[in-house]
Length: 359
Ligand SMILES: *Cc1c(COP(=O)(O)O)cnc(C)c1O
Image (cartoon, rainbow, N blue to C red; front, side, top):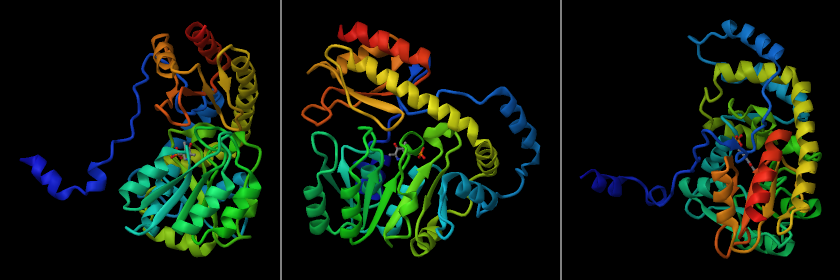
């Protein structure tokens, strides 16, 4: 029986996992995955396509992504002395960090609720995950975080800044304390930097255990799969050893470098999304029974009347709108849903559907 072989050989930690579920979205207005809703201007698409023939697909890609890295350094203001490691999305970088520090007695620590991949990657790389509950306002619980760090001596702490799925920025004083109190690495994950207006990028190098992670996904290039981390050379050199040499393919290198040369286009799109976030927040706030939480990202977490979370989510889907259901019985996110900021038209359709569901 193949199931016997599975039970014998697949590690228990892997068998216990469920795969990351991506719900089918065909025919639906897709507001579940923090994608930028805007395509490239036609002229830019043409210029990009014109470059395609210059990509030598018969050759391996540049293993160092040299040209792309210098473009990233300029656009993301990565300090000159701080090396970068690139990943096939920042998901791969989280995995790479975990693989470098993992062990049965090793701990990955993060506040919760947060980005679910931290816990999942800790589990399948054979680490222990410690989640420290956020306060009711979704900010860090300073005393609980520091106590957990003292007790568990985590190899790595992940702080999403802003946090997903809550959308807020954690208190910087508390983050600074966490960095100085941590025996291991602290990763500030700035996936939503384009919408946040604040960063730790200019802090790397000041403490020897701080790494900042970014991604091109949420600013408008989710399909390319490109993430980066930057930090002290001593850490980056170790991570670089276990990065697979050709993890950033030639088309991604060419396309990302091209896109970053036209970063003004993405700045314009993301500033439009930030403006729409404000409009959407105000409309949610004005809706009886709905409580939105302030966001520095391109999504808004909101709570619907008690016991209605799943029904509202299902109702929206029947009306053609896909958002994210975060409800779990008894969790801090009970009856909470998360909507990505879309185009003004998409946001209006979402609001009309929500009004019909909670009204
Ligand atoms: C979406 C997200 C990521 C993953 O981004 P990719 O680069 O697309 O893999 C990482 N961290 C947080 C907090 C996210 O929300």
